[in-house]
Image (cartoon, rainbow over all chains, first blue to last red; front, side):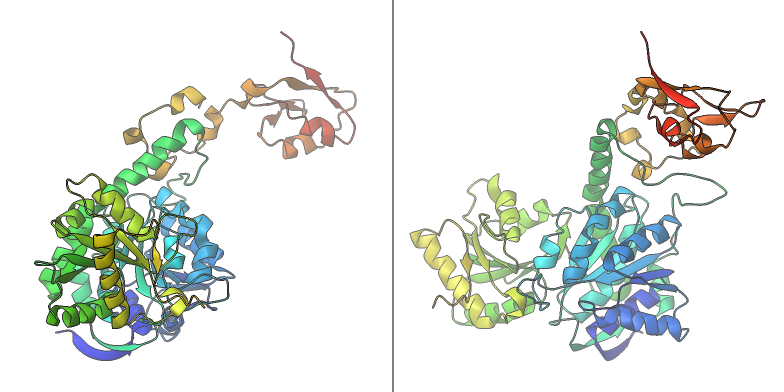
Length: 392
Length: 97
């Protein structure tokens, strides 16, 4: 039986990476980093994890090292955040293009300026189209479980794509939570050793990362996107098998008290737990409210989402990032797109909150719900509401 | 590989567009691009091999007499060899119809 321990969530993620038995970790250990790679460096140094830890000179080099490492067939991991993730940006597109199953934890934090490394989703919303599978954790246990799941999905021969596990910076990464730590033997039942389909090998020379002329580039992108779209079924199947083995089941779209709901909150990440408390409170007061949480952000599960919001009058999306100059928050935009073709589609209300580490409280969700109800009746603003912004 | 042989459907691409066959750049006949070509004056040539080293298309190889000669299948006429030759033994001549 797995042991239940209290541990900082960052260290818990490191333990997940350890029991996943990675071969190579490349990371740049400076702000904005987390204790994840710091603890992994300790685990490698003290012999608990037999892996190569490459302390590189920048996050750009960290992801570049991951490309090289994964290309040789090594199980490869890194973690990043905020400005660090932004510096990786150029290389992030190359990993899925080469079909390399790198796994990365992103501790979601704001992008400067003003200088800020507190929690929001600005960093990852800038990386929406990089072609990685992306999941969002709501708590420490999920961060641990999704990390193991990430390797399983990434290395599946019908996927062979990199995976990002998102977890909220500070709100999750720097807090101590109780969770069950699986050991190597248990994880081995779920996660077999990585068998690359192709790898760099001097005995069998091959080229990865060649030029894609205009006659090839479109087809190359199509091949990668096709794999990403098809990865949905592997993601879901791998979650089912995880649940069958360890008792915790996960789904691309999770619902909470949506039965009979008229106003629906839509969230992603750790605020979902605060949102659940808000829903409980509002339900007790007789309000018809429910909650939908996105766990799988890429590929986006239109079918499951549409099913989850069927019959809902007022979906209210809470984004934790802005799309300056755009029509709404980035998640709200996708939700609108997902519902556009539905018969009797509801209006989707867009709210942005919790930027740059500003606390999102139960009262904020109550505010969102009451505004959504008013907008449903009297018409909504053309863009979005920035919750909690001081006007004077 | 000429451009035309790259026109295949996405389902037929190798995983991640990897090139599985070593030395496939030999198939890229860059000589088709050429508008001028190098001409060697053997009187001036000291067989120093700088043209051979600097050629970006590895078009040069040494013949039996020890001179370095560019293979016109691959020479794309960039003129680096002529520019770098310490004895000005190479001159670039326009391709004629």
